[in-house]
Image (cartoon, rainbow, N blue to C red; front, side, top):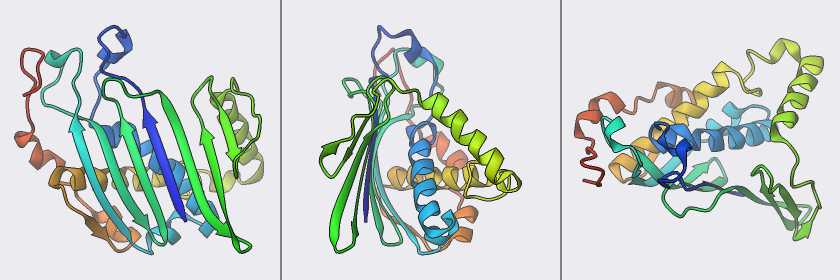
Length: 230
């Protein structure tokens, strides 16, 4: 099984006022949403996210610095691009999260697997105004202008009707315990890119206990100077 995820947009463009909003390292700010997608998907398949995490986690990541239009607002440099290879049990995950100049605007997912003796592929684009669903090469003709936000509200309403007692406790749903798992994966991703090497975690409990050492590493982060990368 294989999952490819690309989330990118040009967040360095000087002519976009939104880009002056301060961001944190992209492993935490944006890639965490990609992890939420994967844990929700695999958790539904295996019964819960812990079932797949207990099969072991391997992470190898790389990162590039962000070049903000307002460098004076940042105490230290932050990462603006990360690429990574992750193995969750038998599932391989390849990711690209890119907020660098010229990056295309996309929220693309590609999922490949085997079923009934043959391979299959699902490609999805979640970008607002450009929605697309392709199954085994056949465009499913979804409404490109469909609203993700309305979809979230409808899904949540269904959950309230079907399983209200589990919404705030089970990691099968996007609640605080689920978010804890996703941010721990982001911590693992950041540390791997910071050290430039593969990191391996054996179980869910090991993941929850993992300390990326972010605070201790901060004094070593680079600084922006006079609007230029240093």
